[in-house]
Picture (cartoon, rainbow, N blue to C red):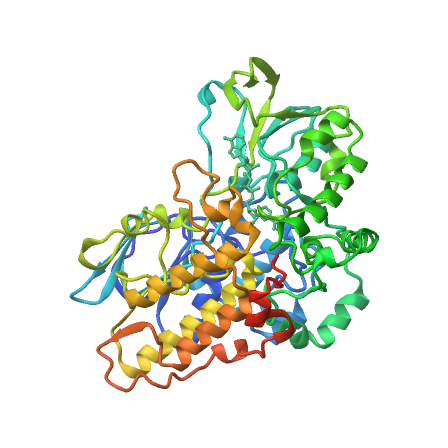
Length: 581
Ligand code: N01
Protein backbone atom coordinates (compact mmCIF):
# COMPACT_ATOMS: atom_id res chain seq x y z
CA UNK A 1 0.00 0.00 0.00
CA UNK A 2 1.30 3.44 -0.83
CA UNK A 3 2.09 5.80 2.05
CA UNK A 4 -1.05 7.71 2.75
CA UNK A 5 -0.17 11.12 4.09
CA UNK A 6 2.25 12.88 1.78
CA UNK A 7 0.88 16.28 2.74
CA UNK A 8 1.08 16.41 6.53
CA UNK A 9 3.61 19.26 6.57
CA UNK A 10 2.84 21.74 3.83
CA UNK A 11 2.21 25.39 3.12
CA UNK A 12 -1.43 26.34 2.58
CA UNK A 13 -2.62 26.80 -0.99
CA UNK A 14 -3.91 30.33 -1.32
CA UNK A 15 -5.25 32.06 -4.40
CA UNK A 16 -5.01 29.23 -6.91
CA UNK A 17 -7.88 28.92 -9.34
CA UNK A 18 -9.16 25.55 -10.44
CA UNK A 19 -11.95 24.12 -12.49
CA UNK A 20 -13.16 22.03 -9.57
CA UNK A 21 -12.68 21.33 -5.91
CA UNK A 22 -13.87 17.94 -4.71
CA UNK A 23 -14.54 17.46 -1.02
CA UNK A 24 -13.66 13.94 0.12
CA UNK A 25 -11.45 11.17 -1.27
CA UNK A 26 -13.68 8.18 -0.75
CA UNK A 27 -14.87 6.23 -3.77
CA UNK A 28 -17.00 9.18 -4.90
CA UNK A 29 -14.23 11.76 -4.69
CA UNK A 30 -11.68 9.51 -6.35
CA UNK A 31 -13.89 8.63 -9.30
CA UNK A 32 -14.95 12.27 -9.72
CA UNK A 33 -11.30 13.31 -9.82
CA UNK A 34 -10.56 10.63 -12.40
CA UNK A 35 -13.39 11.82 -14.64
CA UNK A 36 -12.55 15.52 -14.26
CA UNK A 37 -8.95 14.88 -15.19
CA UNK A 38 -10.16 12.81 -18.14
CA UNK A 39 -12.00 15.90 -19.35
CA UNK A 40 -8.74 17.83 -19.15
CA UNK A 41 -9.93 19.92 -16.20
CA UNK A 42 -7.91 21.03 -13.20
CA UNK A 43 -9.16 19.63 -9.91
CA UNK A 44 -8.08 19.32 -6.32
CA UNK A 45 -9.52 16.98 -3.73
CA UNK A 46 -9.45 17.87 -0.03
CA UNK A 47 -9.66 14.92 2.32
CA UNK A 48 -9.92 15.11 6.10
CA UNK A 49 -8.38 11.68 6.58
CA UNK A 50 -4.78 10.66 6.14
CA UNK A 51 -5.61 8.42 3.19
CA UNK A 52 -8.19 7.54 0.59
CA UNK A 53 -11.23 5.32 1.20
CA UNK A 54 -13.72 7.54 3.05
CA UNK A 55 -16.06 5.31 5.03
CA UNK A 56 -13.58 2.46 4.70
CA UNK A 57 -10.76 4.64 5.97
CA UNK A 58 -12.58 5.58 9.17
CA UNK A 59 -14.63 2.48 9.99
CA UNK A 60 -11.85 0.14 11.06
CA UNK A 61 -13.73 -1.43 13.94
CA UNK A 62 -13.28 -5.19 14.39
CA UNK A 63 -15.42 -7.19 12.00
CA UNK A 64 -16.17 -4.29 9.63
CA UNK A 65 -17.03 -5.61 6.21
CA UNK A 66 -19.36 -4.85 3.37
CA UNK A 67 -22.75 -6.50 3.09
CA UNK A 68 -23.12 -6.14 -0.64
CA UNK A 69 -21.26 -9.02 -2.30
CA UNK A 70 -17.72 -7.93 -3.10
CA UNK A 71 -17.84 -8.97 -6.77
CA UNK A 72 -20.52 -6.29 -7.12
CA UNK A 73 -19.31 -3.79 -4.50
CA UNK A 74 -16.59 -2.40 -6.74
CA UNK A 75 -16.19 0.06 -9.60
CA UNK A 76 -17.61 -1.03 -12.93
CA UNK A 77 -16.19 1.71 -15.15
CA UNK A 78 -13.08 -0.18 -16.17
CA UNK A 79 -13.20 -3.70 -17.53
CA UNK A 80 -9.42 -3.96 -17.01
CA UNK A 81 -9.83 -3.03 -13.37
CA UNK A 82 -12.56 -5.65 -12.97
CA UNK A 83 -10.29 -8.26 -14.47
CA UNK A 84 -7.13 -7.44 -12.54
CA UNK A 85 -8.61 -7.15 -9.05
CA UNK A 86 -9.62 -10.31 -7.22
CA UNK A 87 -11.71 -10.33 -4.07
CA UNK A 88 -11.00 -13.02 -1.53
CA UNK A 89 -14.37 -13.37 0.22
CA UNK A 90 -18.06 -13.18 -0.60
CA UNK A 91 -18.28 -10.11 1.65
CA UNK A 92 -15.01 -8.19 1.64
CA UNK A 93 -13.50 -7.21 4.99
CA UNK A 94 -12.68 -3.54 5.59
CA UNK A 95 -8.88 -3.94 5.19
CA UNK A 96 -9.37 -5.46 1.74
CA UNK A 97 -11.79 -2.74 0.65
CA UNK A 98 -9.32 -0.12 1.87
CA UNK A 99 -6.58 -1.89 -0.08
CA UNK A 100 -8.84 -1.73 -3.14
CA UNK A 101 -9.37 2.02 -2.57
CA UNK A 102 -5.61 2.48 -2.39
CA UNK A 103 -5.20 0.41 -5.53
CA UNK A 104 -7.63 2.75 -7.32
CA UNK A 105 -5.66 5.78 -6.12
CA UNK A 106 -2.39 4.30 -7.38
CA UNK A 107 -3.64 2.73 -10.59
CA UNK A 108 -5.26 5.95 -11.76
CA UNK A 109 -2.49 8.11 -10.30
CA UNK A 110 -4.93 10.10 -8.22
CA UNK A 111 -2.84 11.05 -5.19
CA UNK A 112 -1.06 13.96 -6.90
CA UNK A 113 -4.33 15.89 -6.84
CA UNK A 114 -5.47 14.90 -3.35
CA UNK A 115 -4.59 16.94 -0.29
CA UNK A 116 -4.87 14.74 2.81
CA UNK A 117 -5.31 15.61 6.49
CA UNK A 118 -7.27 18.67 5.46
CA UNK A 119 -10.89 19.39 6.30
CA UNK A 120 -12.91 21.80 4.20
CA UNK A 121 -14.49 24.30 6.57
CA UNK A 122 -16.26 26.72 4.24
CA UNK A 123 -17.39 27.17 0.66
CA UNK A 124 -18.73 30.53 -0.45
CA UNK A 125 -20.28 31.43 -3.82
CA UNK A 126 -19.01 34.59 -5.45
CA UNK A 127 -21.62 36.03 -7.79
CA UNK A 128 -19.11 38.29 -9.54
CA UNK A 129 -16.70 35.61 -10.62
CA UNK A 130 -19.27 32.78 -10.62
CA UNK A 131 -16.86 30.69 -8.60
CA UNK A 132 -16.66 29.05 -5.20
CA UNK A 133 -14.10 30.11 -2.59
CA UNK A 134 -13.18 27.00 -0.63
CA UNK A 135 -11.43 27.24 2.72
CA UNK A 136 -9.87 24.54 4.89
CA UNK A 137 -8.69 24.02 8.44
CA UNK A 138 -5.10 24.18 7.13
CA UNK A 139 -5.44 27.74 5.86
CA UNK A 140 -6.05 26.87 2.21
CA UNK A 141 -8.20 29.28 0.24
CA UNK A 142 -8.75 28.23 -3.35
CA UNK A 143 -11.12 29.36 -6.08
CA UNK A 144 -13.02 26.86 -8.19
CA UNK A 145 -15.77 27.00 -10.77
CA UNK A 146 -17.33 23.82 -9.42
CA UNK A 147 -17.53 22.59 -5.86
CA UNK A 148 -18.37 18.91 -5.67
CA UNK A 149 -19.39 17.40 -2.37
CA UNK A 150 -18.24 13.78 -2.18
CA UNK A 151 -18.67 13.74 1.57
CA UNK A 152 -20.42 10.40 2.04
CA UNK A 153 -23.83 9.56 3.44
CA UNK A 154 -22.69 8.03 6.72
CA UNK A 155 -19.56 9.99 7.55
CA UNK A 156 -20.46 12.33 10.41
CA UNK A 157 -20.32 10.19 13.57
CA UNK A 158 -23.09 10.57 16.12
CA UNK A 159 -21.49 10.63 19.55
CA UNK A 160 -24.24 11.08 22.15
CA UNK A 161 -23.05 13.03 25.17
CA UNK A 162 -23.70 10.86 28.21
CA UNK A 163 -23.54 12.37 31.69
CA UNK A 164 -20.17 11.80 33.35
CA UNK A 165 -18.35 10.92 30.12
CA UNK A 166 -15.25 12.78 31.23
CA UNK A 167 -15.26 10.84 34.53
CA UNK A 168 -14.69 7.56 32.73
CA UNK A 169 -11.03 6.57 33.16
CA UNK A 170 -10.72 4.18 30.22
CA UNK A 171 -10.76 4.79 26.48
CA UNK A 172 -13.97 5.48 24.53
CA UNK A 173 -13.99 4.43 20.87
CA UNK A 174 -16.61 5.36 18.28
CA UNK A 175 -16.88 2.66 15.61
CA UNK A 176 -16.81 5.31 12.89
CA UNK A 177 -13.56 6.84 14.15
CA UNK A 178 -11.60 3.75 15.00
CA UNK A 179 -7.87 4.09 15.82
CA UNK A 180 -5.64 3.26 12.86
CA UNK A 181 -3.51 0.91 14.92
CA UNK A 182 -6.54 -1.13 15.95
CA UNK A 183 -7.57 -1.99 19.50
CA UNK A 184 -6.84 -5.17 21.42
CA UNK A 185 -9.51 -5.85 24.03
CA UNK A 186 -7.77 -8.91 25.43
CA UNK A 187 -8.23 -9.13 29.19
CA UNK A 188 -10.57 -6.13 29.33
CA UNK A 189 -14.16 -5.59 30.44
CA UNK A 190 -15.82 -3.86 27.53
CA UNK A 191 -19.12 -2.00 27.20
CA UNK A 192 -20.71 -1.60 23.75
CA UNK A 193 -23.47 0.96 23.30
CA UNK A 194 -25.75 0.37 20.32
CA UNK A 195 -26.93 -2.60 18.30
CA UNK A 196 -26.94 -1.36 14.68
CA UNK A 197 -24.82 -2.74 11.82
CA UNK A 198 -21.51 -1.58 13.30
CA UNK A 199 -22.25 -3.13 16.68
CA UNK A 200 -23.59 -6.34 15.17
CA UNK A 201 -20.38 -6.82 13.24
CA UNK A 202 -18.00 -5.89 16.04
CA UNK A 203 -19.68 -7.56 19.04
CA UNK A 204 -18.73 -11.17 18.17
CA UNK A 205 -15.06 -10.20 17.67
CA UNK A 206 -14.91 -8.02 20.79
CA UNK A 207 -16.49 -10.89 22.74
CA UNK A 208 -13.77 -13.23 21.53
CA UNK A 209 -11.13 -10.96 23.10
CA UNK A 210 -12.75 -9.40 26.18
CA UNK A 211 -13.03 -11.04 29.58
CA UNK A 212 -16.46 -9.47 29.95
CA UNK A 213 -18.71 -7.79 27.41
CA UNK A 214 -21.79 -5.78 28.29
CA UNK A 215 -24.01 -4.66 25.41
CA UNK A 216 -26.35 -1.73 26.06
CA UNK A 217 -29.33 -2.11 23.74
CA UNK A 218 -31.95 0.57 23.15
CA UNK A 219 -33.67 -1.07 20.17
CA UNK A 220 -33.19 -4.72 19.18
CA UNK A 221 -32.22 -5.17 15.58
CA UNK A 222 -33.14 -7.48 12.73
CA UNK A 223 -30.17 -9.37 11.44
CA UNK A 224 -29.67 -12.09 8.87
CA UNK A 225 -26.64 -14.39 8.74
CA UNK A 226 -24.05 -13.47 6.11
CA UNK A 227 -22.81 -17.02 5.54
CA UNK A 228 -19.63 -15.35 4.44
CA UNK A 229 -17.13 -17.59 2.68
CA UNK A 230 -13.94 -17.52 0.68
CA UNK A 231 -14.52 -17.11 -3.03
CA UNK A 232 -13.37 -20.06 -5.07
CA UNK A 233 -11.23 -19.54 -8.17
CA UNK A 234 -13.96 -21.17 -10.18
CA UNK A 235 -16.64 -18.72 -8.96
CA UNK A 236 -14.41 -15.72 -9.63
CA UNK A 237 -13.46 -17.05 -13.08
CA UNK A 238 -17.10 -17.53 -14.03
CA UNK A 239 -18.03 -13.97 -13.10
CA UNK A 240 -14.96 -12.49 -14.75
CA UNK A 241 -15.74 -14.42 -17.93
CA UNK A 242 -18.70 -12.09 -18.43
CA UNK A 243 -18.41 -9.33 -15.85
CA UNK A 244 -20.19 -6.75 -18.06
CA UNK A 245 -23.28 -8.96 -18.12
CA UNK A 246 -23.44 -9.05 -14.32
CA UNK A 247 -22.91 -5.29 -14.16
CA UNK A 248 -25.71 -4.69 -16.66
CA UNK A 249 -28.11 -6.94 -14.76
CA UNK A 250 -27.21 -5.13 -11.54
CA UNK A 251 -27.89 -1.71 -13.06
CA UNK A 252 -31.39 -2.81 -14.00
CA UNK A 253 -32.26 -3.78 -10.43
CA UNK A 254 -34.01 -1.57 -7.86
CA UNK A 255 -30.99 -1.78 -5.57
CA UNK A 256 -28.29 -1.47 -8.21
CA UNK A 257 -27.00 -4.92 -7.34
CA UNK A 258 -28.09 -8.29 -8.55
CA UNK A 259 -29.55 -11.11 -6.49
CA UNK A 260 -32.34 -13.59 -6.92
CA UNK A 261 -35.71 -12.64 -5.61
CA UNK A 262 -39.27 -13.71 -5.71
CA UNK A 263 -41.95 -11.28 -6.78
CA UNK A 264 -45.03 -13.09 -5.54
CA UNK A 265 -46.89 -11.71 -2.51
CA UNK A 266 -46.19 -13.43 0.80
CA UNK A 267 -49.82 -13.88 1.75
CA UNK A 268 -50.67 -15.73 -1.45
CA UNK A 269 -48.50 -18.61 -0.27
CA UNK A 270 -49.64 -21.12 2.32
CA UNK A 271 -47.96 -21.07 5.74
CA UNK A 272 -45.97 -24.21 4.79
CA UNK A 273 -44.84 -22.72 1.47
CA UNK A 274 -43.78 -19.53 3.19
CA UNK A 275 -41.79 -21.41 5.79
CA UNK A 276 -39.97 -23.36 3.11
CA UNK A 277 -39.30 -20.24 1.08
CA UNK A 278 -38.01 -18.28 4.08
CA UNK A 279 -35.73 -21.19 4.99
CA UNK A 280 -34.30 -21.14 1.47
CA UNK A 281 -33.71 -17.39 1.51
CA UNK A 282 -32.30 -17.58 5.06
CA UNK A 283 -29.88 -20.25 3.84
CA UNK A 284 -28.68 -17.84 1.13
CA UNK A 285 -28.36 -15.16 3.80
CA UNK A 286 -27.61 -11.45 3.68
CA UNK A 287 -29.73 -8.55 2.45
CA UNK A 288 -31.39 -10.67 -0.30
CA UNK A 289 -33.40 -12.34 2.49
CA UNK A 290 -35.77 -9.39 2.05
CA UNK A 291 -36.34 -10.56 -1.53
CA UNK A 292 -38.18 -13.66 -0.32
CA UNK A 293 -41.46 -12.03 -1.40
CA UNK A 294 -42.32 -8.95 -3.40
CA UNK A 295 -44.53 -7.20 -0.88
CA UNK A 296 -42.55 -7.50 2.35
CA UNK A 297 -41.76 -3.80 2.56
CA UNK A 298 -45.21 -2.72 1.41
CA UNK A 299 -47.78 -4.74 3.31
CA UNK A 300 -47.66 -4.96 7.09
CA UNK A 301 -49.43 -8.35 7.13
CA UNK A 302 -46.85 -9.74 4.73
CA UNK A 303 -44.05 -8.21 6.78
CA UNK A 304 -45.42 -9.84 9.93
CA UNK A 305 -44.78 -13.27 8.38
CA UNK A 306 -41.07 -12.63 7.79
CA UNK A 307 -40.78 -10.96 11.20
CA UNK A 308 -42.29 -14.02 12.90
CA UNK A 309 -39.88 -16.28 11.04
CA UNK A 310 -36.85 -14.17 12.01
CA UNK A 311 -37.96 -13.97 15.66
CA UNK A 312 -38.19 -17.76 15.75
CA UNK A 313 -34.63 -17.94 14.40
CA UNK A 314 -33.43 -15.67 17.21
CA UNK A 315 -35.17 -17.84 19.79
CA UNK A 316 -33.66 -20.99 18.28
CA UNK A 317 -30.17 -19.52 18.49
CA UNK A 318 -30.22 -17.73 21.86
CA UNK A 319 -30.44 -20.20 24.72
CA UNK A 320 -31.54 -17.92 27.56
CA UNK A 321 -35.23 -17.12 26.91
CA UNK A 322 -35.12 -13.76 28.70
CA UNK A 323 -32.15 -12.62 26.59
CA UNK A 324 -33.82 -13.98 23.45
CA UNK A 325 -36.95 -11.96 24.29
CA UNK A 326 -34.89 -8.80 24.62
CA UNK A 327 -33.19 -9.48 21.30
CA UNK A 328 -36.46 -9.94 19.40
CA UNK A 329 -37.49 -6.73 17.64
CA UNK A 330 -41.18 -5.88 17.44
CA UNK A 331 -40.89 -3.29 14.68
CA UNK A 332 -41.29 -3.80 10.93
CA UNK A 333 -38.74 -6.24 9.54
CA UNK A 334 -36.21 -4.31 7.41
CA UNK A 335 -37.68 -0.93 8.30
CA UNK A 336 -34.40 0.23 9.76
CA UNK A 337 -31.44 -0.82 7.64
CA UNK A 338 -31.29 -4.63 7.82
CA UNK A 339 -28.13 -5.98 9.49
CA UNK A 340 -26.05 -8.87 8.24
CA UNK A 341 -24.01 -10.76 10.81
CA UNK A 342 -21.63 -13.56 11.52
CA UNK A 343 -22.42 -15.15 14.85
CA UNK A 344 -24.12 -12.12 16.40
CA UNK A 345 -26.99 -13.81 18.22
CA UNK A 346 -24.76 -16.80 19.13
CA UNK A 347 -22.49 -14.40 21.02
CA UNK A 348 -25.15 -14.00 23.72
CA UNK A 349 -24.77 -17.68 24.64
CA UNK A 350 -21.27 -16.96 25.92
CA UNK A 351 -21.12 -16.79 29.72
CA UNK A 352 -19.14 -13.53 29.79
CA UNK A 353 -21.56 -11.62 27.52
CA UNK A 354 -24.46 -9.69 29.03
CA UNK A 355 -27.27 -7.74 27.39
CA UNK A 356 -28.62 -4.69 29.21
CA UNK A 357 -31.92 -3.18 28.07
CA UNK A 358 -31.78 0.62 28.01
CA UNK A 359 -35.04 1.11 26.12
CA UNK A 360 -37.09 2.18 29.12
CA UNK A 361 -34.35 3.31 31.50
CA UNK A 362 -31.66 4.99 29.40
CA UNK A 363 -28.00 5.05 30.28
CA UNK A 364 -27.86 7.16 33.42
CA UNK A 365 -24.21 8.14 33.32
CA UNK A 366 -20.67 7.02 32.84
CA UNK A 367 -18.78 6.37 36.09
CA UNK A 368 -15.00 6.21 36.53
CA UNK A 369 -14.96 2.49 35.75
CA UNK A 370 -18.28 1.62 34.24
CA UNK A 371 -21.70 2.55 32.90
CA UNK A 372 -24.65 3.13 35.20
CA UNK A 373 -28.19 2.09 34.23
CA UNK A 374 -31.10 2.20 36.66
CA UNK A 375 -28.73 2.59 39.60
CA UNK A 376 -26.63 -0.46 38.66
CA UNK A 377 -23.01 0.05 37.62
CA UNK A 378 -21.71 -2.28 34.91
CA UNK A 379 -17.91 -2.39 35.11
CA UNK A 380 -16.03 -1.41 31.95
CA UNK A 381 -12.34 -0.85 31.19
CA UNK A 382 -13.14 0.36 27.67
CA UNK A 383 -16.32 1.60 26.00
CA UNK A 384 -17.32 1.31 22.37
CA UNK A 385 -19.99 3.69 21.11
CA UNK A 386 -21.54 2.10 18.03
CA UNK A 387 -24.05 4.92 17.92
CA UNK A 388 -24.13 5.63 14.21
CA UNK A 389 -24.09 8.80 12.16
CA UNK A 390 -25.85 12.03 11.38
CA UNK A 391 -26.86 10.46 8.09
CA UNK A 392 -27.08 12.06 4.64
CA UNK A 393 -26.73 15.69 5.73
CA UNK A 394 -24.33 15.46 8.70
CA UNK A 395 -21.20 16.06 6.64
CA UNK A 396 -22.79 19.06 4.92
CA UNK A 397 -23.63 20.52 8.32
CA UNK A 398 -19.94 20.59 9.23
CA UNK A 399 -19.08 22.92 6.34
CA UNK A 400 -20.23 26.51 6.20
CA UNK A 401 -21.68 26.47 2.69
CA UNK A 402 -22.97 29.86 1.57
CA UNK A 403 -24.68 30.31 -1.78
CA UNK A 404 -26.41 33.15 -3.59
CA UNK A 405 -27.34 36.23 -1.57
CA UNK A 406 -25.61 34.92 1.53
CA UNK A 407 -27.95 31.95 1.93
CA UNK A 408 -26.43 29.24 4.14
CA UNK A 409 -27.15 25.66 3.11
CA UNK A 410 -27.76 24.76 6.76
CA UNK A 411 -30.45 27.44 6.84
CA UNK A 412 -32.06 26.28 3.61
CA UNK A 413 -32.12 22.68 4.87
CA UNK A 414 -33.26 23.49 8.39
CA UNK A 415 -36.56 21.65 7.90
CA UNK A 416 -34.89 18.87 5.91
CA UNK A 417 -32.73 18.62 2.79
CA UNK A 418 -34.13 19.95 -0.49
CA UNK A 419 -32.46 18.98 -3.73
CA UNK A 420 -33.21 18.36 -7.37
CA UNK A 421 -32.37 14.68 -8.02
CA UNK A 422 -30.03 14.64 -5.02
CA UNK A 423 -27.48 16.30 -7.30
CA UNK A 424 -27.91 20.04 -6.79
CA UNK A 425 -29.94 22.56 -4.83
CA UNK A 426 -31.48 25.92 -5.71
CA UNK A 427 -29.44 28.92 -4.57
CA UNK A 428 -26.13 27.06 -4.80
CA UNK A 429 -25.00 27.21 -8.44
CA UNK A 430 -22.26 24.85 -9.58
CA UNK A 431 -22.40 23.02 -6.23
CA UNK A 432 -22.97 19.33 -6.81
CA UNK A 433 -23.53 16.41 -4.49
CA UNK A 434 -22.57 12.83 -5.14
CA UNK A 435 -25.25 10.55 -3.65
CA UNK A 436 -26.92 13.53 -2.04
CA UNK A 437 -30.25 13.41 -0.20
CA UNK A 438 -33.08 12.79 -2.64
CA UNK A 439 -31.10 10.22 -4.65
CA UNK A 440 -31.11 6.40 -4.21
CA UNK A 441 -27.70 6.55 -2.47
CA UNK A 442 -27.90 4.37 0.66
CA UNK A 443 -30.81 2.35 -0.74
CA UNK A 444 -28.69 1.24 -3.68
CA UNK A 445 -25.28 -0.32 -3.81
CA UNK A 446 -23.22 2.75 -2.93
CA UNK A 447 -20.49 2.32 -5.52
CA UNK A 448 -22.98 1.97 -8.37
CA UNK A 449 -24.92 4.99 -7.09
CA UNK A 450 -21.65 6.94 -6.95
CA UNK A 451 -20.58 5.95 -10.45
CA UNK A 452 -23.90 6.91 -12.00
CA UNK A 453 -23.80 10.34 -10.32
CA UNK A 454 -20.19 10.99 -11.26
CA UNK A 455 -20.75 9.97 -14.89
CA UNK A 456 -23.80 12.21 -15.11
CA UNK A 457 -21.95 15.14 -13.53
CA UNK A 458 -18.92 14.61 -15.76
CA UNK A 459 -21.21 14.80 -18.79
CA UNK A 460 -22.88 17.90 -17.42
CA UNK A 461 -19.58 19.64 -16.70
CA UNK A 462 -18.18 18.65 -20.10
CA UNK A 463 -21.33 19.98 -21.73
CA UNK A 464 -21.09 23.27 -19.86
CA UNK A 465 -17.57 23.69 -21.16
CA UNK A 466 -18.70 22.83 -24.69
CA UNK A 467 -21.40 25.49 -24.67
CA UNK A 468 -19.49 28.05 -22.61
CA UNK A 469 -21.96 28.09 -19.71
CA UNK A 470 -20.74 29.80 -16.57
CA UNK A 471 -23.20 28.39 -14.05
CA UNK A 472 -26.00 25.91 -13.57
CA UNK A 473 -28.66 25.67 -10.91
CA UNK A 474 -31.96 23.82 -10.59
CA UNK A 475 -35.25 25.68 -10.99
CA UNK A 476 -37.31 25.99 -7.83
CA UNK A 477 -40.43 24.42 -9.35
CA UNK A 478 -38.53 21.28 -10.37
CA UNK A 479 -36.76 21.05 -7.05
CA UNK A 480 -40.04 21.39 -5.16
CA UNK A 481 -41.64 18.77 -7.38
CA UNK A 482 -38.74 16.37 -6.84
CA UNK A 483 -38.81 16.82 -3.06
CA UNK A 484 -42.54 16.16 -3.15
CA UNK A 485 -42.03 13.07 -5.29
CA UNK A 486 -39.30 11.66 -3.00
CA UNK A 487 -41.63 12.18 -0.08
CA UNK A 488 -44.65 10.65 -1.84
CA UNK A 489 -42.77 7.56 -2.97
CA UNK A 490 -41.40 6.98 0.52
CA UNK A 491 -44.96 6.68 1.84
CA UNK A 492 -45.51 3.60 -0.32
CA UNK A 493 -42.86 1.75 1.66
CA UNK A 494 -43.10 0.54 5.24
CA UNK A 495 -39.57 1.86 5.62
CA UNK A 496 -40.93 5.34 6.22
CA UNK A 497 -42.80 4.16 9.31
CA UNK A 498 -40.03 3.77 11.89
CA UNK A 499 -37.54 5.99 13.66
CA UNK A 500 -34.47 5.20 11.60
CA UNK A 501 -31.54 7.25 10.39
CA UNK A 502 -33.23 7.24 6.96
CA UNK A 503 -35.62 9.80 8.41
CA UNK A 504 -33.08 11.50 10.69
CA UNK A 505 -34.89 10.15 13.76
CA UNK A 506 -31.81 8.56 15.35
CA UNK A 507 -30.65 11.94 16.62
CA UNK A 508 -32.89 14.17 18.73
CA UNK A 509 -33.73 17.50 17.13
CA UNK A 510 -33.11 16.56 13.49
CA UNK A 511 -35.98 17.15 11.08
CA UNK A 512 -37.96 14.02 10.27
CA UNK A 513 -37.79 13.62 6.49
CA UNK A 514 -37.26 10.46 4.46
CA UNK A 515 -33.94 11.40 2.85
CA UNK A 516 -32.96 8.80 0.24
CA UNK A 517 -35.01 8.17 -2.91
CA UNK A 518 -36.82 4.86 -2.53
CA UNK A 519 -38.44 4.61 -5.98
CA UNK A 520 -35.73 2.26 -7.27
CA UNK A 521 -32.32 2.84 -8.80
CA UNK A 522 -33.21 2.23 -12.49
CA UNK A 523 -36.28 4.46 -12.36
CA UNK A 524 -34.15 7.19 -10.85
CA UNK A 525 -31.44 6.67 -13.47
CA UNK A 526 -34.04 6.89 -16.21
CA UNK A 527 -35.20 10.22 -14.78
CA UNK A 528 -31.61 11.53 -14.77
CA UNK A 529 -31.17 10.38 -18.37
CA UNK A 530 -34.37 12.08 -19.45
CA UNK A 531 -33.26 15.31 -17.80
CA UNK A 532 -29.98 15.13 -19.69
CA UNK A 533 -31.65 14.22 -23.01
CA UNK A 534 -33.83 17.27 -22.71
CA UNK A 535 -30.80 19.57 -22.36
CA UNK A 536 -30.73 19.44 -18.56
CA UNK A 537 -34.39 20.02 -18.12
CA UNK A 538 -35.21 21.57 -14.77
CA UNK A 539 -31.90 23.40 -14.61
CA UNK A 540 -31.05 26.96 -15.60
CA UNK A 541 -27.77 27.35 -17.48
CA UNK A 542 -26.20 30.80 -17.44
CA UNK A 543 -24.24 32.49 -20.22
CA UNK A 544 -24.46 29.56 -22.65
CA UNK A 545 -22.86 30.71 -25.90
CA UNK A 546 -24.05 27.71 -27.89
CA UNK A 547 -27.26 25.71 -27.92
CA UNK A 548 -27.76 23.60 -24.83
CA UNK A 549 -30.18 21.19 -26.47
CA UNK A 550 -27.94 18.25 -27.25
CA UNK A 551 -25.40 17.34 -24.63
CA UNK A 552 -22.42 15.39 -25.81
CA UNK A 553 -22.92 12.29 -23.69
CA UNK A 554 -19.64 10.58 -22.91
CA UNK A 555 -20.13 8.62 -19.74
CA UNK A 556 -23.85 8.44 -18.99
CA UNK A 557 -24.42 6.16 -21.96
CA UNK A 558 -23.56 3.01 -20.03
CA UNK A 559 -26.39 3.73 -17.58
CA UNK A 560 -28.97 3.58 -20.34
CA UNK A 561 -29.83 -0.03 -19.64
CA UNK A 562 -33.22 -1.39 -20.62
CA UNK A 563 -35.42 -1.41 -17.56
CA UNK A 564 -36.30 -4.84 -16.27
CA UNK A 565 -39.96 -4.00 -16.72
CA UNK A 566 -41.20 -7.15 -15.08
CA UNK A 567 -39.67 -5.93 -11.90
CA UNK A 568 -39.73 -2.21 -11.84
CA UNK A 569 -42.46 -1.03 -14.17
CA UNK A 570 -44.60 1.82 -12.87
CA UNK A 571 -47.42 -0.74 -12.70
CA UNK A 572 -45.32 -2.86 -10.36
CA UNK A 573 -44.66 0.16 -8.18
CA UNK A 574 -48.36 0.98 -8.10
CA UNK A 575 -49.12 -2.63 -7.20
CA UNK A 576 -46.52 -2.36 -4.43
CA UNK A 577 -44.54 -5.21 -5.86
CA UNK A 578 -41.05 -3.78 -6.04
CA UNK A 579 -38.52 -5.59 -3.91
CA UNK A 580 -36.46 -2.97 -2.13
CA UNK A 581 -33.46 -3.79 0.00
O1 N01 B 1 -25.44 2.99 13.33
P1 N01 B 1 -27.01 2.78 13.62
P2 N01 B 1 -24.38 1.97 12.70
N1 N01 B 1 -28.22 5.30 23.94
O2 N01 B 1 -27.57 4.15 13.61
C1 N01 B 1 -27.93 3.14 19.36
C2 N01 B 1 -24.08 1.42 7.47
N2 N01 B 1 -23.18 0.36 7.86
O3 N01 B 1 -23.06 2.63 12.72
O4 N01 B 1 -31.90 2.07 17.30
C3 N01 B 1 -28.28 4.01 23.59
O5 N01 B 1 -27.58 1.80 12.70
C4 N01 B 1 -29.08 3.03 18.40
O6 N01 B 1 -30.27 2.74 19.09
P3 N01 B 1 -31.71 3.10 18.40
C5 N01 B 1 -25.48 0.85 7.39
O7 N01 B 1 -26.19 1.50 6.39
C6 N01 B 1 -23.00 -0.64 6.98
O8 N01 B 1 -24.49 0.64 13.34
O9 N01 B 1 -31.56 4.49 17.84
N3 N01 B 1 -28.18 3.59 22.35
C7 N01 B 1 -28.58 1.90 17.50
O10 N01 B 1 -28.76 0.65 18.10
C8 N01 B 1 -25.99 1.16 8.77
O11 N01 B 1 -27.38 1.16 8.88
C9 N01 B 1 -22.22 -1.68 7.32
O12 N01 B 1 -32.68 2.99 19.50
C10 N01 B 1 -28.00 4.51 21.38
C11 N01 B 1 -27.09 2.21 17.42
O13 N01 B 1 -26.76 3.01 18.53
C12 N01 B 1 -25.38 2.52 9.01
O14 N01 B 1 -24.08 2.42 8.46
C13 N01 B 1 -21.62 -1.75 8.55
C14 N01 B 1 -27.93 5.88 21.69
C15 N01 B 1 -26.74 2.97 16.17
O15 N01 B 1 -27.02 2.17 15.06
C16 N01 B 1 -25.27 2.93 10.46
O16 N01 B 1 -24.88 1.79 11.23
C17 N01 B 1 -21.81 -0.71 9.43
C18 N01 B 1 -28.06 6.26 23.03
N4 N01 B 1 -28.01 7.54 23.40
C19 N01 B 1 -22.60 0.34 9.09
N5 N01 B 1 -27.77 6.56 20.52
C20 N01 B 1 -22.07 -2.76 6.33
O17 N01 B 1 -21.90 -2.58 5.15
C21 N01 B 1 -27.74 5.64 19.54
N6 N01 B 1 -27.89 4.41 20.07
C22 N01 B 1 -22.18 -4.08 6.82
